[in-house]
Image 1 (cartoon, helix red, strand yellow):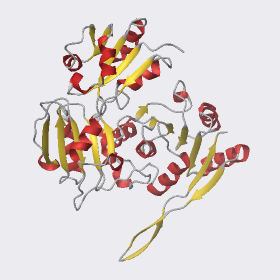
Image 2: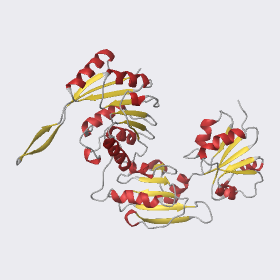
Image 3: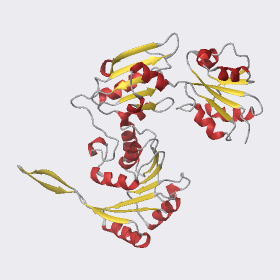
Image 4: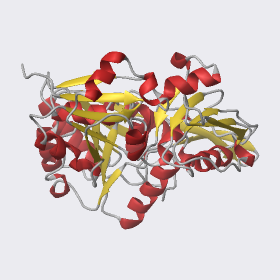
Length: 400
């Protein structure tokens, strides 16, 4: 096993005073210390070569590799393995090369300031990420702590809350926690007007108004939540479709014929860090999907202009595939070949021609074949009757 030469050290606003004697000894014997400007200012008495974060930041791994053979310390804020640089470094280095030295994280400090039990709250980061990623967590009585991406983030989050009927939500922004200059700002979402420091952490207590949007993370959002030209997988069928696709943490979905993106968006909302690629040839539908993704909190939805199977070439292998349009033997063959072991494939059909194709595939590959019929009550003159939607034939199977 390689001997450790790289130490990733978490540090708080109290600087060296918050570090253990053993961790201080590591810094004092380091040849090189890497960190941000604020990290270096927190350790002014340590004598070593100082290097600032490289630009672009992705160059950090190459920099560390070039320093192999020296005693190197990387300074990070709080816990290096909790939404921080430690995970990226750990994936790139061999086992045994790194020692991690965690400090209290911003989540722990903020929870203690708020008096909140950490298992009972959502812990999120939008630092260096689209702020819209926090939208799926806006639900009645939810509490969350958010690592922000700058001084403007709290106002953006306040706006998201207010737009969705949660304007009375209580907000707290904390800065320089644990240091002599610690700051706290309290307010209400609909009237938030504080100017806060660039580096801050936000606590949110969601309070739903009478007309608050109810957008659970389980599949089956109302069709009214999506901008669409009418060609989309409808609410009840979408819920069944997602149940068969089985969203899982970090899993990738190919949504072939994605239309307004409803299946891909609900896939991403349903599991932490789930990703999706939507393949759609119509410009106006891709624009709708992008709008829906931003509004519903999945801004990382990747949209590709093209048709299957040619558009599938070179894509990362999926954990699940949904074929909502353009089903053919060739599309199935390419998608199923790319699908990982234990991957799920679901295909929906509403036309007789597509249904016949599903029947052929089912006869050859097995799986499950079901027909989904939905009827909704609607006015019939002055009375009410049942109005049926188009019946959907659904085929699903798991790759073994």
